[in-house]
Amino acid sequence: MHAARGLGSFAVGDYVVFAAMLLVSAAIGIYYALAGGGQQTSQDFLMGGRSLSALPVALSLTASFMSAVTVLATPAEVYRFGAIFSIFAVTYLLVVLITAEVFLPVFYKLGITSTYEYLELRFNRYIRLCGTVLFIVQTILYTGIVIYAPALALNQVTGFDLWGAVVATGVVCTFYCTMGGLKAVIWTDVFQIGIMVAGFASVIIQSSVIQGGFNTILNDAYEGKRLNFWNFNPNPLQRHTFWTIVIGGTFTWTSIYGVNQSQVQRYISCKSRFHAKMSLYINLVGLWVILICSVFCGLALYSRYHDCDPWTSKKVSALDQLMPYLVLDILQDYPGLPGLFVACAYSGTLSTVSSSINALAAVTVEDLVKPRFRSLSERTLSWISQGTSVLFGVLCIGMAALASLMGALLQAALSIFGMIGGPLLGLFALGILVPFANPIGAFVGLMAGFAISLWVGIGAQLYPPLPERTLPLSLETYGCNSTYNGTNLMTTTEMPFSTSAFQIYSPERTPLMDNWYSLSYLYFSTLGTLVTIFVGIIVSLPTVILKGAH
Image (cartoon, rainbow, N blue to C red; front, side, top):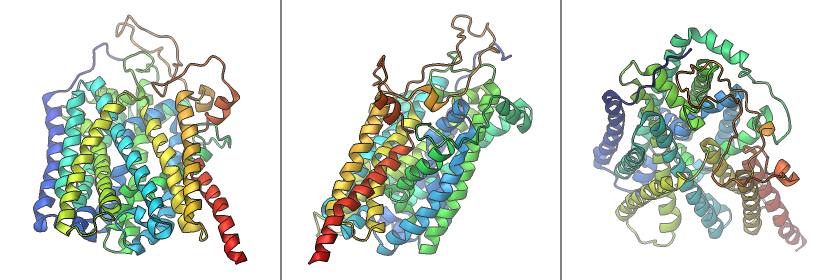
């Protein structure tokens, strides 16, 4: 039985811990703005002068994609759907191998600042422009979600001020990106990943103390059917199976690691190709550690609430709020620790947002400004880079306000990556792997891939897949203390799980919805990539054959 007292809310100590985290991040920005004569050239600002070594870059790569979405949504995902999520460990391995052996050598050898420069070298200026524009749209959308997501979840559980948090995050990020450039981004990431691990560790240690050791947690999880690692169902409509995670996940994450500017910019800024490869492989270990932490937090959540689910009994209004709820539940006697956890979630956000802002600035300067205005001095370019950083920071905060109108987070975030990242990955793969692909084929392929993945992605948002596709596991409320909330005890174990505000409740489901729109969200990207490559090859073939005929 759980104690019949309400949970604590934020105390002074917690705000102090949180503010300290923001201040240290800002201080790193100021340090790199002044150290070594500041940011003289746009190359310094955007690439850290290509002088970085493997370890900080590796930690930075890990931090950027372990956003607050990971800290809050992965444990909730494990709580709701089981530990099959940990199969992503295999996915990360494949992704790092593909990135290090296929994409990195090409980009590093060319010595480019923007990944989309490659598209111009390989195809032409217009294809490069398509790539750049898609990237800018995708990144601003995603960054909005990343800023807003944790603010909302934390606000509803801890009473932490919502827009205060959103604006503070945005402003601090914009500040240190503008002041310190890529070096500041990378070193703040290193600091923030430290905080994230500390936040996770405090939750894991304290929950295992309260629940009576790791064994209890694993036993509870086993009895609740949460340890469902072996699901080899090949059906592409099941949300998470071994195959959707390994195949779909690999495409989704390769589009992030292999060709996404925010990541590529990091490993290209290493001092040698060896350091660049090392940074990817060290980062793999980091990804695994964070994955294990977040999956274990999910199991701890289940162990703590296996007989009284806070979501069904209406104590939290969304799955993303389970983690903060657990933190206040088990850490409320330790002043400052809930603050550490919030700092942990926010470090995830800051690191992701800062890398996005820096990447957006790089892409804008390299792809949109430099080709148009050739005569600008390096000093001017450095100023322009800083100006665009501010601009994109403001845009991302604006996007966060828009994100407040959207639904469930992890899915929304990954769907955006899948819908836009997939076709872009296809475009690069076409250039690198298919020697005879030409600009027309590339363009038609990109558009086709984009059209199809948008069609599926938007369809899936409008008509979410049925529970038998997503396979949510049962949640129980029989152990809830009825004095705790006598008014609204619910007896159901299933709740309608809505993914977006734009749902259309259609009484009859058509085959189109049950098959096409129910595709696992991890396959959006796979679909986009394969369609792009396939169409690109087919459209490029006639020109090859004609050339051969001459």
